[in-house]
Length: 89
Image 1 (cartoon, rainbow, N blue to C red):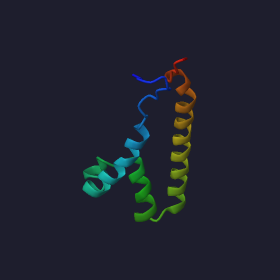
Image 2: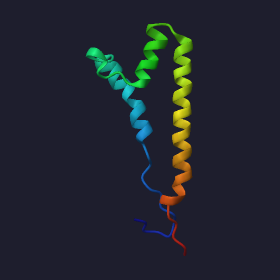
Image 3: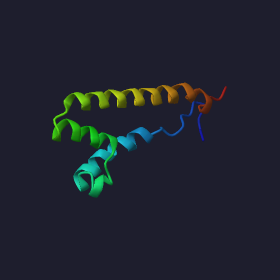
Image 4: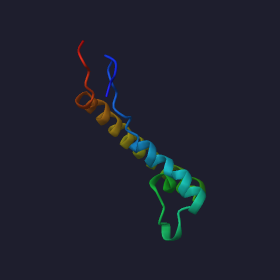
């Protein structure tokens, strides 16, 4: 709720940020875990590039990840007009 007559922004959408920060926890604590239980997409890209030396494949996976994040960003930015309301003075 706004106290002033300025536009209020909703809480930032941090779903993507939370999903991609999980790499550090999975890598440091379990390195993928037993039977790849904590193998996330970003950790999989890391493994392909730096453990198996499949740089081209890892680059293609990274490009796909970039497109997915770009699409989600465009969706959030386009839909923000529906969930950001400005008060008229």
